[in-house]
Length: 621
Image 1 (cartoon, rainbow, N blue to C red):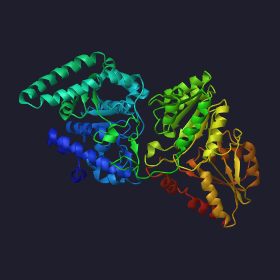
Image 2 (cartoon, helix red, strand yellow):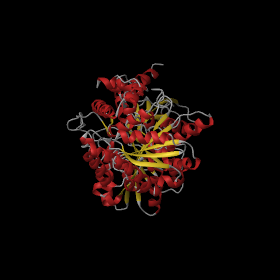
Image 3 (cartoon, one colour):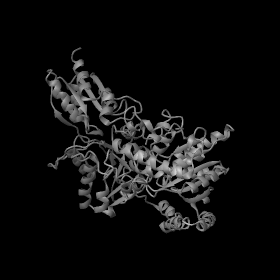
Image 4 (cartoon, rainbow, N blue to C red):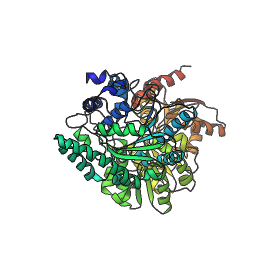
């Protein structure tokens, strides 16, 4: 472990033999397992890619060559080998080591991501710039078999293959994205892997022959035959060769001799090349190796011995609550179809897949396809409910506009992880869905203040023949099955009444506003609290009334300034020529850093104490 922490750069790899590389791989996996079990993070993918990363950094010069990891969540071994092991105790924490590639963190991070399938387009840009500048370095894109099935990847593959530009793509094939992959591309790669039998026979034969001197000679001979067989058998029917790539593989991602040989080979090919490497997600940690549901993809702190979380919340997550609500409705209505783009695990949808498999569709990492599919199902009388993270909804914007809202299709979008999101940094904050959806005609945008209200909104959404978005944050919270209440589309509700002013808020911030106002009441400042559960359409009748009655209006929200509730209220006030004093408390227009959700709220001065003091000071003037 001490050796791992003392790594400054990858230069030392050039002098290590294969046995030493094997030992290093085991040490790095142990280091990752030990640290991630304490901090949480992405585990299985990093254990699986460790040996491949070592081989790449032995063959390529990371100080000159451009190595781009798709998504970037699988870069822990890369960070360790480029001198960042000492920072792992603060992995994914405020002012700590980022969980993805970050240009400001290291000269070895030449590009950034967090979302899937951008690496190939980015890699082509680096390669074209290199050629235009008449420079000489390698561009290496590392992409998983889940990400390569995305439409963006195919757009890039189509372009790259037509240009004959020198570019190396390494397909890190572990048969999983978060959980098991789906779709025809996954099935194609299954066939290219030549089945489990091929790899098992290869390993067993190699192990047997290497036990004797003569056997080693035979093993080397068979290895050459095997290589030629691969080139003849696999290339002819390969999807990638038909796109214009030189294709090599599949090769063993746990065999340094094989990986290094092929990496050196592709390094010298002056055209697009794809090297197909078979890795094992979770390699070296048996519980993760045997995990087919994605439980060890992203983890919180856990016990290494049994894999169980160190801290177990007694409260359900909003994702679990929404999934249970949808399951209850779907059991009674066979027209409800649940769709998700590879978010079965994150959105807690496994129970729906298990109980109602014919009403559940996982399209893989293909957000655009998921939304158009939902539109078409709605057109045919079904009731599609799309579960998708707020940050990933960005990838399907045109489909929401063009295919759902424009045709006023009855599609429900459950927007998970809305608002601040802990630990995953800039790329995973759920802060852009409201500004994105607000201008779109026909859209309904809502956010419940409680699980009970979430159920009421879902029931309304199923009855409302329009595109209907329900946002909710990544939090755990109490909930009880209470008597349902009918909600009128676009209606707001009064949570508390006061005479000195009004605070308009929504979602999780309603309960925070209640705490703030309770404290203000002790200072003889009594505010009315409005739950603006609909951001579109708004309750114009109530808003007109309160703007006429109250002078001071406080807007409190977990969204970007200038493009959410603040702009809605101020625009409406301007229309009716209202002369109120407005005070807006929301998020500044900048990308949010890595921290916990509560830290992000506090660091943006949106915590209860900060808002209490701000409002109190307004009444002192």
